[in-house]
Image 1 (cartoon, one colour):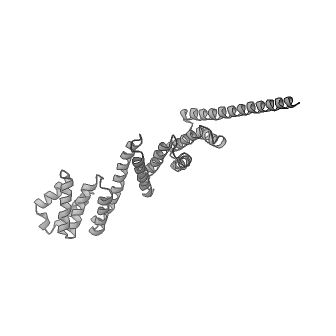
Image 2 (cartoon, rainbow, N blue to C red; image 1 turned 90 degrees about the vertical axis):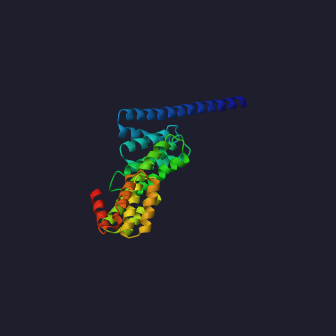
Image 3 (cartoon, rainbow, N blue to C red; image 1 turned 120 degrees about the vertical axis):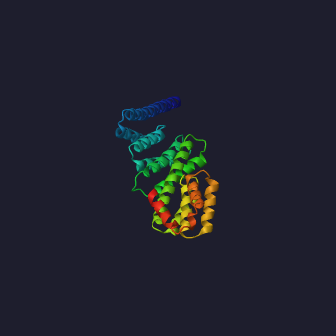
Length: 266
């Protein structure tokens, strides 16, 4: 009787294991099937339908080996469809669940790219530019040898030039309206925060002009020396050299000439 009971339990366990294995196999086949269908739809440019498949994997098979890849595909497709806010949400969710995941570096880069393309919209606040700078800077700092760091450096240079030029435009508005003091504040901010920007030589030149307008000769001379030392071949250095050589500083009409030149350039 005891042997019969043991045999019955053995059969029950064997049947249970066999059933579970079939269920697991079925689940694995189902999630793989859905994932491959999503990929096929992407290849056919049926992006919205493919997103539905990748969402299905995350909803029905959250622990599937395809779950993380599905999130990344969803994020990329939304990025291509210009749904940047949705892309950022998906990628932040992926990073929180996979801080050291296979696609984490790519997720961080794509988030930075989302903020990067937002600045092309004039109605967007400059805060998105600053966020993009922070994101790209983090990639360069934490993953300097990654395949995304090189592009991040190019994007970072562009963004810094972009912000510097916006600051420069505001400064020039003040300068053209005979307000050299607030213009100098803006120019100084460029020198302080965007030293690698291509606008720096012209900024120093405009600072020289602003100091001249305020009759601060020591400051203007010092600015010229800084410009000449750091950018000896710049056309802005040559501009001041021409002014100094022609003794325009002593000419009473000098300040009027400055404003005429500013207005003719912009």
